[in-house]
Amino acid sequence: MNRKLKNNIFEWLFWAAMVFGTLLIAGVVALSVLVFKYPERLGEVESGVALATGALALFTAFLWLAAAITARFARAEIAISTAVNSANLTLQIDNRYQSDRALRIRHGAAQFLANERGVVLECDHDISQYGTAEYQHPWHGLSSDLIDLFHYYDWIGYLTSEDCKAIDRQVVWRKLGPWIINHYKMCEERIKEVQEHQPHRWPYLEPFCKDLMDRRGKWYEQRKMEPPMEDAEKELAAFLQREHVRSHRGFHPPKEISLQQD
Image (cartoon, rainbow, N blue to C red; front, side, top):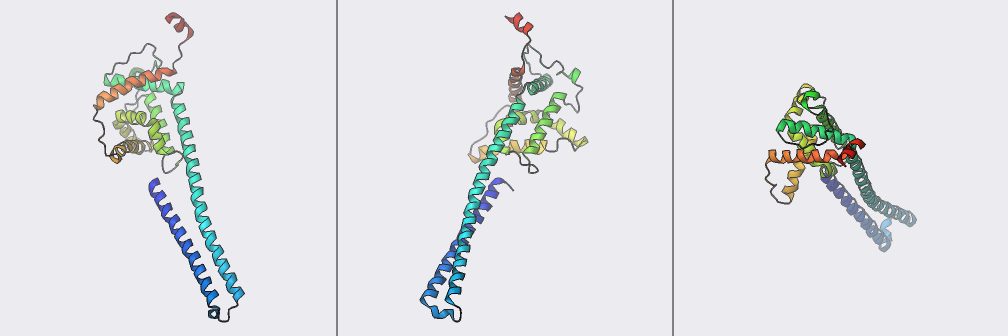
């Protein structure tokens, strides 16, 4: 059940409760007016008992309305708090993704994929000396750096899944979507091979990545726009070149190198 459907169900229940409470109040007031105008209809019932019963019914109706309104405000506060927590967790994930260690892993992954695809990367300082295939001993065609990345993406997939719901997937799509999608596209067949032999590996990765790609399509569909026509291979090559540049942000050259350059 998606968030929009849950919101709609809550709104229906809220307004049903409001209508029911209003009708209950109106019924009690109308009954009280009839009893006041025609006291003989009470028969053997004492007027004090009738008054107390009417007051209790009116009080119950007001409690009903107050509970419905309180539930609505509480839900709004919880939604805001959940959104803030989701954003904070996503920022923590992004900070880890931009850490020096993660940038070196991303450099090795970009280097490995670029060598495979014939993409030229100009690298003055090789910060991933073991990023090439001769050192990596690929596992189902995946280097150790790529394996580390997909472990991380699978973990994010779990945090955004229905099993956990710690993070709103929409927030992750906005923040990290392009990186996750592009890495997945370049290694999709190898990931499927891994899961064919070891189904317990990365169980959240494929549905997570597919969902992120679907969100991109729905974004254009909702705005009645055509997705941009791009050369997939060209775009992926450009992504690897940009990723290579980004990964060097985590490189702090030794003093001797800095002095030689000066």
